[in-house]
Amino acid sequence: MIAQSIVDWLEAEKGLRLRLSTARSVSGGCINDAHIAETEEGGLVFLKSNQRNQLPLFEAETKSLEQLSSAAVVRVPTPLCHGVIGETTVLALEGIAMTNRTNNSVSQERLGLSLANLHQSFPQTEQFGADFDNYIGATPQPNPWTASWADFFTIHRLEYQFQLAESRCHKFREARTLLDAVYTHLSSLDIVPSLLHGDLWSGNVSFDETGAPVVFDPATYFGDREADIAFTHLFGGFGPDFYEAYRGQIPPVEPIRETIYNLYHLLNHFNLFGGGYASQVDSSIQKILSAV
Picture 1 (tube, rainbow, N blue to C red):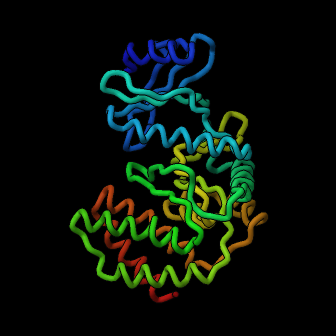
Picture 2 (cartoon, rainbow, N blue to C red):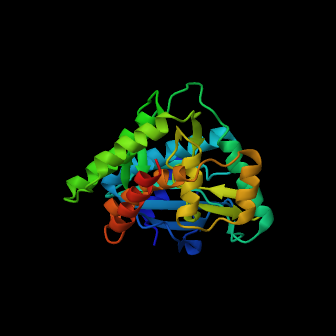
């Protein structure tokens, strides 16, 4: 249930009056509580809430959504406001009526074209990273501007995650060998920095009532566009029309790049959830070492 203090805060901050009788709990992932409610003005508001100390998570999400919105190629929920109310931190977003069009070929094609357009949104600098750090799930994601993609991905993605694993008392034996091999491989590529969603799995994509794609929960930065495409394969949920439309704009690359980029997400899932992800990390390490 949405607390009255949050209702009062939203009216004070944005002049929006929620109709509490319409509020309902919705999926907010495994990190936040989430509700959607109608306003007296006839719109929708999506509210995420968490503990007081999680305000940086919502600050980073706001910046990432604003960065995606500025590209003007795919719809994202507009951030309304965020703040701390008592012991709760809250993020209010534009509510969007979503429809399930996972198997709709037209919607999947529109998603593929939108992502291709996003990946051709280039920064004014030729460096990789972002003006701000953010989060991948609940894990901090450092984005320092870096001249080399090999340096950026090896140090600030893979090595960072290996260090987190080691701090949790799990050492992957061939981590250093893997990092050296990945660095050498990526150094041989000519990568142009592209604006990435950064956390592009099917749970962070939907479609509005017109069938237009909507993306949310981003972890944006400028990097190799293939990192986004790789993650779409890891857990599935994207149709053949999505890939056909995307590849009609941006040709495919060598397959091993997918395994390299998805290793980052597997390491992050291990650091967040443990369990069987360790064996998937080990398998990916062996696959990469045998290919590069």
